[in-house]
Image 1 (cartoon, helix red, strand yellow):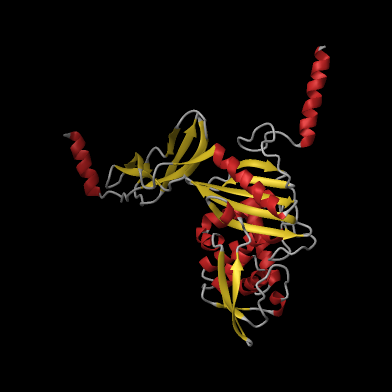
Image 2 (spheres, helix red, strand yellow):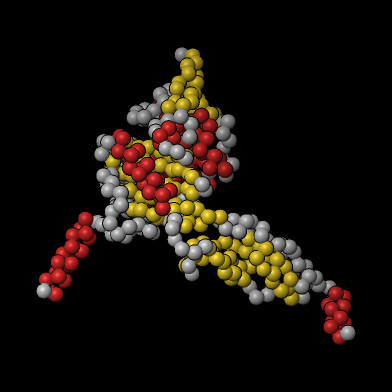
Length: 390
């Protein structure tokens, strides 16, 4: 009888394994809680990068226009590095104008500002604008794609290989739900100003060609910003090979989530399942802020300095992911140098502040010196010695 029970349990376990049911992410339930029909999906905490849910997260598939998350990231990074300014004029090549697919019907020779081109990519998912900006930033689409793949490698996107800047179907152009979440997080964290575009429902550009000037309307392809409370972006995609994809971002009460689905069976399902993922995240997790930037945590002795010690302060306030209903508040542990030798400069790293919940680490931030501590003069050292003898 015992052998029969063991055999039955083993069979059930094998069935669950075959179905892909199990704990695959932080806090995810042992039974599939969401029953998604999309081929792959990911839910990630934007602040910490913690995975909250995954389904076939590392399966490489065509991403369609979600590719443009990387295109936008490289555009914003290039502007930040001073490679161009948003008001610079971008001329449209024959190659860019001939992209097809989702587009804003730019004509060869037409010019638009870099800002308006970027707006067309973020709001209307314009393939022609994406390739025009790729050529503007890197000299050619091929050179830009090399940068895309190099940046993907830097971000740890191991399931990714880009072939173009816009996401049109072509052999070998693939990524995964996990990698999409990684590049979405990088874009939204480092360039939050992109929300100015990704939360805009309708806008327009003005075509200026030899035929004259005409206004062209832009409507956001991401229906989340109309349908979901707290939606902040980000990017849709659909082609014959990719089916329907979406990287959706949202924020509520300081908790920023990134939900990705790939190969959803139809237009509406991709939005429904991203909303289901976001609902799951907001229902089960919250974000808590750590100690504020500049708060003193401890003081560290200084040897042979004009001052005897310096304050160790929090370099950066961090956000911690907390599971709702979990027991215990967060606590801190300091890991700092026992002492410092003068001279000490303000802003030097002297340790780290570790945040714990129930003894488990949930975050950490650097501790830095709050003030300078110049080296003491011989006169100061003598005065101190005399003071000790009295």
